[in-house]
Image (cartoon, rainbow, N blue to C red; front, side, top):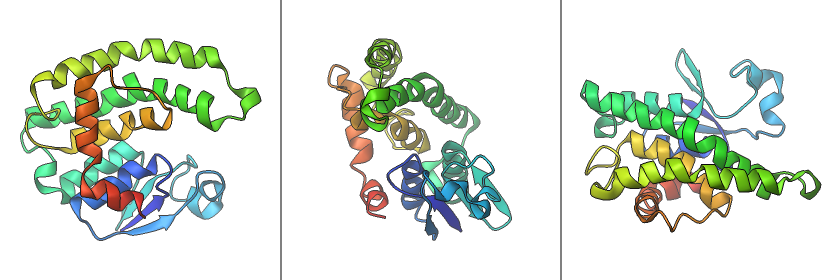
Length: 199
């Protein structure tokens, strides 16, 4: 199995998933600035983005799809085994991608990644205001449970934490959402994350 990407990117969440499930894989160092636009890589992921996964005849792109596959195929209890819990894991995965990540990416772009003269403080301010609503939803959900689906860490937590981690990169303070902060800290403290970051 080959996983394409580097830890300092969205590929980190798929490296984390591979480490969490304990599957044997080769990390093919692929940078999003140049490597991902080369013809050999575009034959794997025509979008020119990372990560991508090749497992036998299966070729996958999109980090969350990769993670759901890894967890369901190799992850044992990491993947929910009943239809209702599976639906909830999908719900939180999709929710993170639609409700949180776009706002966090606006912060990352305009506080960290773009050259100073291209940054727009107004976009950051708008994103910081708008993200309060979904963070309040997540904080309330986590008020009486350790993890998204109850007492155990699952792929739902890994996927959503993979998006929420962008808050740290954007220097966005989550402390006013105590349950989110506690939950994220618990997720990223897993040994699998340390291994992923060290790749």
